[in-house]
Image (cartoon, rainbow, N blue to C red; front, side):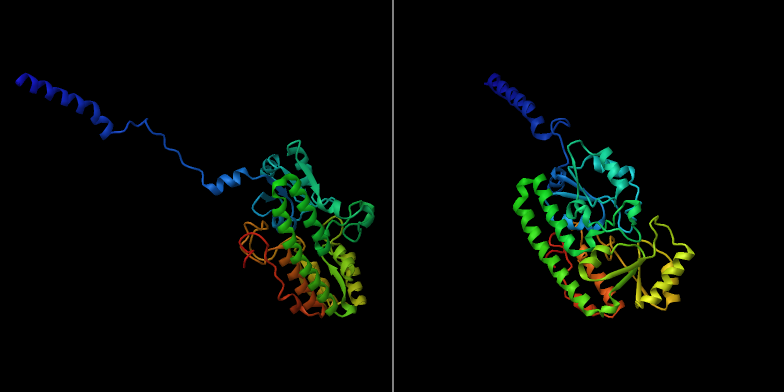
Length: 351
């Protein structure tokens, strides 16, 4: 019996020795710990990349693209898009682009040049402005004289052309991402309703301004296509075609012109700060105010999906311009008070 008991005791020690390590310790190499990529980040990484240029285009395109695509604007707000020189980091972004959407009409020449050099071979550069009007509809004027060959490229200031931009963007995004066709069509429909409301309010604003005051003298000549659509006359631009300050002789001519025409106000630009407009306004005894053509009001992102400010939009920019123009030229600025300026997608969509 002693022999049997001793044998059983020995066997029990062997079992404990074989099983205890598995229950009391884990080898450092027996389990690999990884940091999971958040679901939102995985989604972003898998999105196709669409690169845009100036803020109004970025805002228009992102309202159609919503959260199906990644939209990146290259040209910072408050920057002269005509002379903006892309940064080395922009080349990296362009090298990953699946689609590049620009205005064209020679607006972003340095950026488009870099895009051609940096983009993947199969990536398309689509110019909204060049596809919206024909060469016969180009406007040449004070800042963009015909002898220099560069037409005025600021089509989007005309809300009807902004509608065309939105439709063209929807077509391009659908071609890039056919599975999103219905999604883009819905966003386009909702966004066009907002643009139609802006167009209606703009016509009411213009009608409220005395006919003799429907004249514009601006610093940068960006209102030509808007004026043609809404019945205004552009009487001049302070900034010459080389984008430098005007000469003393040019300033004297502008002062005489403002006095002769009798317009009650002239308009400068926050993107092109200059004391010349103040001099002209002082000597011609008129008011001055700043309008914007590619800088959205307030703080925010031009990308609708990232934006939390319902006024920092293309529609918000134009509503603010209408308010400024109306109050400066004797019109009713309250006509844009109830305009919905928010994006149709992103954080401001339901606000």
